[in-house]
Amino acid sequence: MSTNDGKKRWLVTGAAGFVGSHLVQALVEQGHQVVGLDNLSSGKWENLEGFLKDIPNGTRKNFVFMCEDIRDSRMVEKAVRGADVILHHAAMASVPQSIENPLEAHEINATGFLNILEAARANNVKRVVYASSSAVYGDNQEPVKSEKDVGNLLSPYAVTKLGNELYADQFHQHYGMETIGFRYFNIFGLRQDPAGAYAAVIPKWVEAIKGGQPLIVNGDGSTTRDFVHVSDVVSINIKAGLISANEGQKAFGQAFNICGGQEISLKNLIQTLSDLWLELKPGVVSPGVEHREFRPGDIHRSCGNAQKARDLLGYKPTMTLKNGLRELLLGEGILMP
Image (tube, one colour):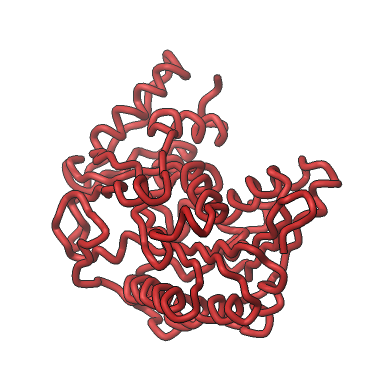
């Protein structure tokens, strides 16, 4: 239920994870009431503790943390009760782990998501915004992916994410639930675990720099990825949660690419890092690069088309790759202003 001052009550699942913790921080700082749900299997309490300690006590009271599992339907129902908006980011997000244990991947990602949807339906929570993945494009070789370009899926993880999109659409069609899914590309920013499921090249390279190790490049550096800063991910989640039923009518039941919309090669990424190094750490030799064989199965080119999100949700990413990397390197204490 909305509060007297017009603020919403939000449930964020996966609240102690990379994206989830940034969502909690933004919502609490904006004065909303937030319930964070996370079983801390991959999320870390430190991701929340770091900013919660700096928030005034009056505002801090707007956040309640529940250390629970989305597979527990009873606890999910308790967490959902009283919410206006659900931002669902709890998942088994590891592709290799899903291949090793497909049953667990299904229980967490598919059954867990159904628990969220059913609890929302039972409690008349209309708005559910959830994390899907660009993994649904599978083996599609189109260099720029639009939402229609779903390919042959390459992992149980991808199967669960596409299945969740179908379930979300069914709950929209049959129960009028206002579901919105986001197919994330390569998110980067502070609090990203280099060993975690979402970790791509940027957090791994940052960890290498911190350890004085070379940057590992698989292949000749021509491989491309589409990077989006976590702040832009947070902005579109909150926007999707707040959009009016009338404005969002065409978006409900749909899934959207959330990306930077630029195809960045690893060569260009290294050059951007080197430029920042020279700018902020002049006179110090920048990290070296070690090339290895291109890994079989890796996608050579990846870029998203975010036009649908721009048209229906007003998505406008604002953080450039260079500025996002600058913030990350400064925040990690690698470079000094």
